[in-house]
Amino acid sequence: MTCDDVRVALSARLDGEDPQAPAGALDAHTAACPGCRSWLASAERVTRLTRLQAVEVPDLTAAVLAAAAAERAAHRDGRVAAARARRQVLRVAVAVAALAQLAVALPILLAGAGVAADPHTGREMASFDVALAVGFALAAWRPERARAFLPVALVLAGCLAATSVVDVAASTTALVHELGHLAAVVQAGLLWALTRSGGEPEHRRPTVLAPGRG
Image (cartoon, rainbow, N blue to C red; front, side, top):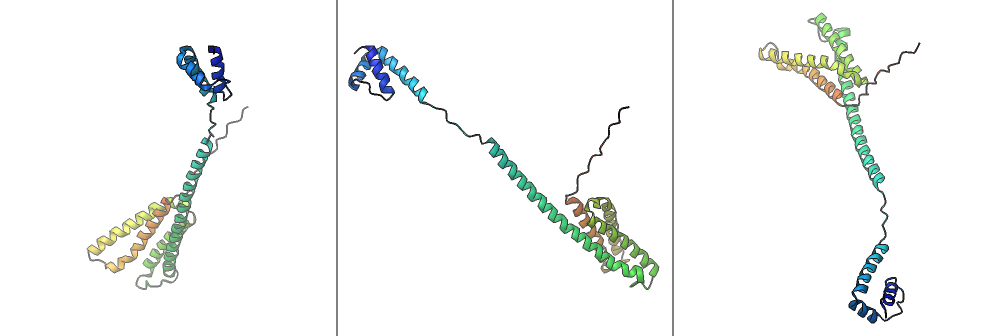
């Protein structure tokens, strides 16, 4: 067999066809012939390259990004829902504190109940308490405006707490008489928590209209 005959047969065998020649004769010729052996190596390399096909890999980028965005949105929605629930609880607490303060102050203001010794001073204090109760009620109704009322509540709570400590230490009043001032401290704490609970609407930027052209 000539080299051309051997190479045709080897090519057919590489393609899975009948080489029309004994396999032993082809292998013996290839082992003895450097040219055919080199040709066979090159042919095998080309055959492997042509048989290797690129595998199409699906593009999962959009799906992965969508899943990540959905997870972030669910987490954000969960935090927003929790913040809203906490805010609602604080609004109810502030409203209850305002109603309780009104329930105590209105009888004193209208009828002087419980202040027979000094009705005028009692009514003045009751008027002050009613004003505070109205402020707390407005804060519960419009939480976004609670921040404006917060300094008043904090200053009142601080002053009452400080004067109570001084008066009790100086024995000018009994501790049991000053326990009522704890309500102002509790109210200030509730109002502060309400302002920190979030959920306030974003301030809209004013729309600037461009001057018309003459």
